[in-house]
Structure formats: structure tokens, C-alpha cells
Length: 408
Ligand code: ARG
Image (cartoon, rainbow, N blue to C red; front, side, top):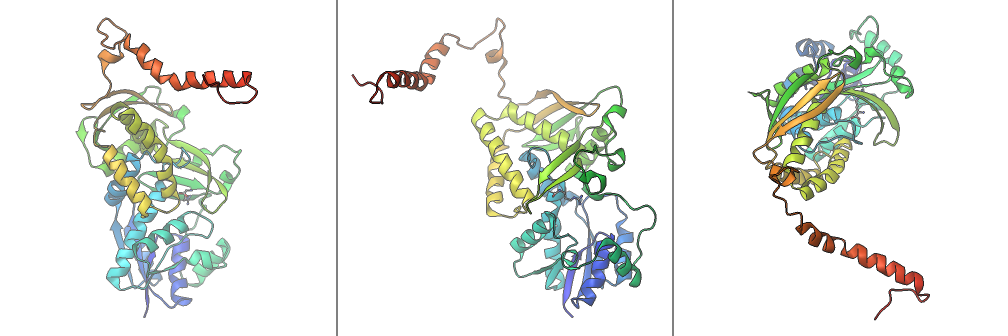
């Protein structure tokens, strides 16, 4: 019998998908539950997959893989889609795709499946990442092909003995991993309405945050956060810890009407406390240690890097080439940054580094100033020379009806 590996979340759609892939496509289904840092009971999820009819189900703890190989490169690139969204959902897709491909190859499956709809970015990311890693694998997206409404899916589930969560339905569509939580649908579809408190889980409202600020010291080694308040920490734990602390101060709420790859604008709410803090701190360490030209060039490149990630091109040659550039740029991004968290704000208030390019004797206005003030005049003479020549040419052109600058 032909086999397929399904990225399984335990939710209604991927549960129905197990049966659908068996009935409509004649597949033997292998369910893969990937732990990317959601607080879920994965053992129960795997049991459910087998109960529904999966021939095999397994859990992969991919939190460290996500942190080290997806979040860290994105952090080094200060990746924010449209300057706002830290790409949390977008980063997990290429990772889950990689695990689907590896599982399909080791289990002799000819296809893989995911539970994305035909309207979002995630389907593009899965289909494109899977093709980049193994173009021979077929990709099936049941939710994209079936004609079912939510009510139909519930009926289909009941008919097939699939348990449907009872009680009040979650009014939002949520995707989360350690880099952030994405919330959409329901009342959020009206972009004028402020997101209700119930949309948020990781952050308190800034107005309810403690009245006293809290400081965090983040140490980076070549662009990678390695210590929190002086204590060495693996990336996963560091990100989780900062999520907890910054979330308590109401830091990391993002309200974004974004341009989806499929051409529509959608309103999404994000909670990304650690991403907000770490990107702010990392940016600051870069401005402290990078030469001006490198810093400015890198900032321009970051928008492209973020776009490629959002568009599902994580495994593309351009993205890999940019990673090489980013890694090279991080050679001196080593040092500590102090941030102050207070009622929704995260402010960098101090930094130090052995690679600092800040030179106090050059910067000071005090008595120990070593900057050569007189030399500035000569520098400016040549710096402004094209400006002077251009202004003169404009003036003589105005007085010369034939056009062009006057020639001696
Ligand atoms: N808009 C985000 C993206 O495309 C999040 C997608 C998943 N969001 C969700 N609530 N299911 O990356």
C-alpha cells in the first residue's frame, strides 16, 4: 500500500485528514507530531492519531532545531516581515517540511501532507520547502482540496468516530512556537477593532503590568544570544525564559495588517515577547560593533531576508547566500546589552563589548577629546566638492540660454 506522512497537530482538520487520505487517496497514513514549543500534550495527540487509523505516529522534539537553525539565523538577520512580524510561524514551516521529508524518506513514503488551507502563506512554505528538499515527493493538502465547511468537518469527524473538542470553541485561529504566537480570525477580521484581551495568552496588557521596570542583560557571541543575566543558557531555554519575563511586562504585542504572498491583506495579532527583546538587543549590539558601511548595507538586506522567509524561500540559493553574508557580518557581534522592560516597552539602556567601535576619546566633548577638529575643514572641502560643482553648474545654466555649464 502506498504511504504518506502527515504533519499532525491533533486538531480537527488534521484528524479528519487522516481518514480523508485513507478513504479518498488510499494511503496508509503516518502521523508526525512536531514539537516546536507549543504547550501541547503530544503523547495524547499521537494516541489520537493511532485511534483514528494512522498506521504509525511519532513525536519529534524539534525545539532545539527550531531555535538553533531557524530562529538564530533569523535573529542574526533581525528578520521582521514588513518591519513588524518576527516570522515565528514562517520559520517553523521549513523545519516541519524538513522533518516530513526525512520521515518520508526513512519510512518509504511516496508523499507528504499538511493541514493548510488554500488561502494562506503556510501552504506555499510547505509546498516550496518540500520541493527544495526532495522534488520527487508528492504533496497532498487535504484541507485545500476538500469542499467541507467547519460544520461538514465536524459531521465527517463524528461519522468516523473522531473525537471533536466539546465546549466553547476557540474564537481564533492560532499557531504558536517558541518564537511567537500568531492569532487571526473572528473579531480580529475587523481591522478597526482593538484585539480583545482573550486573544492574548503570553502577554499581560501593558496597563496591568508591574509598576516597576525590570532589567535584563543579554550577552551575544557572534550574534547568538548565549547568556541571560550572566548565566550561560541554551538558545531554547533563553528564548523561553525571555518570553516569560517580557510577557509579564506586556512586551511583544504586535498588531499587523500584512501583505500575504497570495495577494490579500490580512490582519494578524502576534505575541512575540522574546523576539521583540532579542531583536532590539541584537540590533543595538550591531550598531555598537559594526563598521558604518557594513551596518547600513546589512540593514537594507534584512528586508529581503525577511521577505524570502515569509515567501517560503528558506531553502533557496539566495537565502543561503544571504546567510553566508550574515554569518560573516557577525564576527564581532559579541558583547552585552541591557534592556529595560516596563509596561509594554522594551528599551535598550546600555551596552558593552570588547569589539566596541565606540571610542570615548573620539566622541567626547570633554577635555580629553582626541578628535582633530581642524582636519574637519579639509575633509568637508572635498566631501562637499560635488555639491559645490553642481550648484555652480545650475547657476550658470540658468544664465546661459544654450544650456550646459559655462566653459572657460
Ligand atoms: N500570518 C502569519 C504568517 O503567514 C501567521 C500564519 C499562521 N497563523 C495562524 N493564526 N494560523 O506567517
